Structures are given as structure tokens and as C-alpha cells.
Amino acid sequence: MKSSFKPVFILFLFILGTAIAGCSGGGGGGSVSSSYVSSGNTPSPNPTQTNTASSPSITSMNPSAVTLGASGTIQNNVTIYGKNFGTGTGSVTIDIQAKEMDEPKAAASCSVVSWKNTQITAKLPANTAAGTYNLYVTSSTGVKSAAVIMTVAASDSPLPMITSVEPSDGINANAGLPQITLNGSNFGTSNGNVFLGVDSTPTAALNGAVWSNTKIIIPSQVTQSMLNKSRAYFQVKNASGVSSNTVSLGITTTSTPVDDGDTKVYAMFTANKGGNLLASDNDATELRNALASGTANSVWNGADSTLLLTPSATKASTISKINEIAGKADGNDIFLFYYSGHGSGGSFNTISPSELSAALSRINSGTRKIVILDCCDSGMAIAGLQNVSNITILASTKTSGVEDAQEGRISTNYFSMDAHSMTHYSHDHGYLTYFLLRGFGDNGNTMGEAASGSKVMLSGIIDYASIQTKNYATYLGLSQNPSTFTNSDDFMIKGK
Image (cartoon, rainbow, N blue to C red; front, side, top):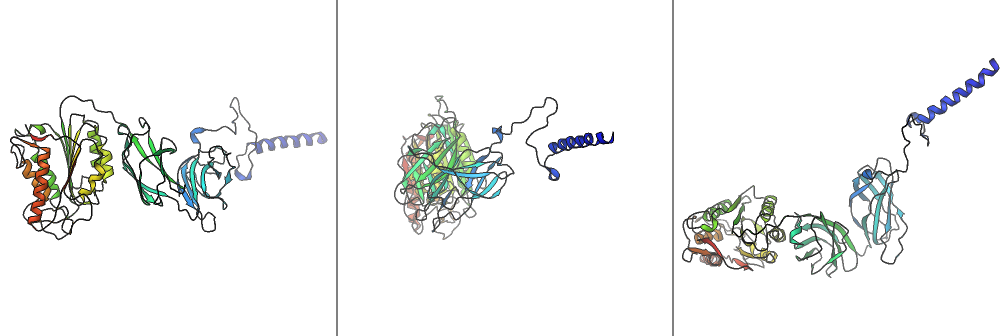
């Protein structure tokens, strides 16, 4: 008995030990077996199966483009942001983008510096040549991400870099591509190419760009359909053939209002006094009151009127309200936009001319649009707005050049020697707005000095306010030269 018992006992221990080792989960120094001990009808997992919902996804890189150092080697790391990279270290690879008729090049591995589920820091291979590459992330489980573009430039060819894009609030698909401004560096002084992609890599060349080393302006144009798309992507390639990073704007689609045969008036009176223009809020409020409904002003009866004053008159609230009106105004309607406050270089209240142009372009092309800007450098905004259809512009200063030493938005509620905001004790309005009020009449029931009979024409109020503002400033020994532009027909702005 003794001699036959030992082998059985030893065999039993061996089988038990093997089973325990096979079930261990890596803790306590145990190793995971390549096999799986299943129970009942539970299926064994397939170690090569890919779950697309958790595949690695790259959302951005910093930088998205690098320049070779003087020795021809990569000097800086690249940080890759995204999701589902996993907690275990996988790999980062690049391969050069194949040109037409070229064979794809073999992938090269990057050195991983750090690895997190949502962020990876890696260094490109030291011998990476200048060019445009696809970059991929592969998780430790072998699942590979989609490619993103990485540009490497030679040390003597600084990378073009797009730092911001206007309009920053996005593109309306119904209006086509508005004027786009790309701000950045190293675009070069000679024209290169700007490419657009709609929900895709930028490959469609855009025409007519006005080019400088730090700014590229792309005029409004009809391009590939953006309806029901989500993002527009832009990339610059300079004259040396070096590509920039890619930037994008959101795309929205609004329904086009159907003409109902009636003329409705939509108006926005906005002001931002910016700390020292005490009359700005008063300007907007009283001009709105002067155009309020009344027996002498049937044009404005039932007008959809919005008053945005300091501090509510932000860039976001202003653009948002214009977008709202774009969803309502049809080809028979009138839209008035008024602003009183600070301005610089054609921009006002942090809104650039191209951003206002993009917003106005979302409004029905048949809608008659009036823009009145009572602020410094307002005349410089005209060039960026004159591509908007059916628009009439009245700006409080001249269209170009440096303002005269005593020219600007001359607000008349207190006296200041600031060259861009001259003021005077006599009144409580900017000069342009003061004469608009006199021209319109002080309320809805009284016709003003610009009236011809029982009505005020748009051309009449613009001529009156422009001439009176200039003459009054001259009388005071100052200088203010309002500017105007129109591509629209004249029409009655107040009266019956």
C-alpha cells in the first residue's frame, strides 16, 4: 500500500497546482496562461478581436508641425491628445504621405517618452527628413488609430503656422463660404495655396486669397456644398511647398425663411462704453426710442427691436442675435444694426469686420441691411462689409489711413483730450448719433430735420447726419469725417 500511494498523491498535487497556476490573474507574481479555463457554456474570448468603440482616437497634437534643428535632427517632443490609448504603453509610428504614383514608405517608430490613456508624449526619429507624414497610435492590444498629418520642415524653411481663424463663430451652410481670414506666421510674402476640406482632409484649392506673411484673406465664394456637414478644415501651403497645421470651423445649417409678402423691421441697438464713453448706452437707448412706433412712423410699427447695452453687449450675444434674425428675415424685410462705443482698426466690441460680414451674410440676400457704427476707426470696417448684399453703411470716421490728431468717435457728454474719444459738455451723445436723432426726430410721433414732407428716406438721413457731423466738428476746431457705402436701393426709413 505504501509503495502504491505516493505516485497517486504526487500526481494529484501536480494536477491541482497546474489548475491553480492556470487560473492566476497576474497577481502575486503569477503569469497569465495563454489558455482560458471556461466554466459551463461561457465562450472563450478572442485575443485578436477589435472593439471599434474603444479604438485609439487622436484629437490633436502639439505641435502639429515641427522644424528640423540646425543639425537636421528633431529637437522637440510631440504631445498627442485623444482617447482610448490605453494604460499600457503601445507604439507611435509615422510614414511619409505617398504622392501620386509613389509607393508608400515603410513606417518608422517614434520614441515614447510618456503614455497615458488620453495623452502621449513622443519623439520623432532623429533622422526624419522634411516632409508631410501620417502619424498613428497603436495601443498595447494592437488596435491602430486613424492617421493624422504631421509636417516636418527643414531648418531653413520655417513652418507656416495658423494661429487663429475668422469668423471664429463658424460658417452657415446656407450662405456658402464667407470671407475667411487666417492669422499666423511664416506664410511667406509670395502667394502659396489655401486648401479646404469639408468633413475631410483639406484638398480643394481656394481662389483669390490676399496674401501676407502673417495674414491670408480668402474672399467670400461659392464652394463645395456644406449642407448637413459638420466642420470645414483649412490648411496653408506656402510658395516653398511647406504645409501648415490644419484648423477648422464648425458648420451650421439654417432654413431659409419664405417670403410672406409683408415688410418687417428687425433692429439691434448695441453699445459698450468700455469704462470711459459715458454716452454710449444713452446713444443706443435714445436712437431706439426715436424709431419707436408712433403715428408718424408706420414703418417701425411692430418692429422686432433688441437693445444690448453694457455689459450685456458682448461679441457672443451680438453674433447670436444676428444668427437668430437670419432665421426669420426674408427678402421683403429690413434689418438695422447700430453700435456705439470703442473701436480700433475697423473692429468694434472685439468683433472684426470679417466676423460681422459673415454674420450679416447669413441673413436673406434680399433683406435690406443698414449698419451704423459710431466708434473710432469705424470707416475702416467698410472694406470688410461691402461684399454683403443689399447693405448700406454709415460710419462715423473716414475709411483709411491714420485718424487725424483730433478725429475719432467724438462723444459729447464730457471733455477729454484723448485723440480717439473727444467729448464735450454740451450734449450727451456721440456727434454722429446726436445728428441722427435730430434728423429722425426725437420720438416716433415727430419728424426730424432730415424729413422730406412726411417721411425720412435712408439716403436723406445718411446725408444729413454725415454733413452735420463734419460741419459741427469743424466749427469746434476738431475733425470728424463720416464715411458711407451702399449697394442697395433707397427706401423710406421713417414715416408713412
